[in-house]
Length: 230
Picture (cartoon, rainbow, N blue to C red):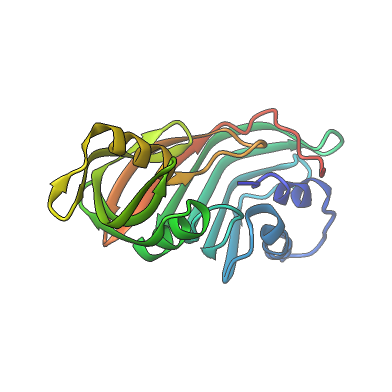
């Protein structure tokens, strides 16, 4: 989840006039596809921008249908950074008082990800509040083939920067398939969502099912991280 490059814009921009914040927001939005991945739409909002002090009170980003590489499509992504100060010459963040992100994912997008990235044919994902999921699957799991549809049930849980499904049962044709198969299925489908990135350490703080979607909340510490482009 490469959020850092968009702050290079803030660190190097030299603007005059009454619409400085609007110009900065436009520059951020232009940088977001490379930073976060292609999306149907990005919106950025900057509050309390002070170019002389190289700081901003708040930076908010909203992305719709964000398609990151090797990850399920995020239907909506909200990122908020508060109390941001950056070093122009070193291009690094010197202070971030708070950073948080909220990702909303739809069952159909989770199913598509399991099919394309996890080799699970015809996956069908059903979510239920507060944190339950069932996945109908078929295919080969760690060398063991399941020729008929099997239903995997479990609880969605946070695991550092990831979301996993803690598998509780695997059943096919009404028959429990046992612990060995459950472990193999668990290994193949997890993590269901991965928000980790080499440039940013995220910790998932909450996982829930809300409004028929999977909602993931995360926080991260950006202080001291480099803003230099690679």
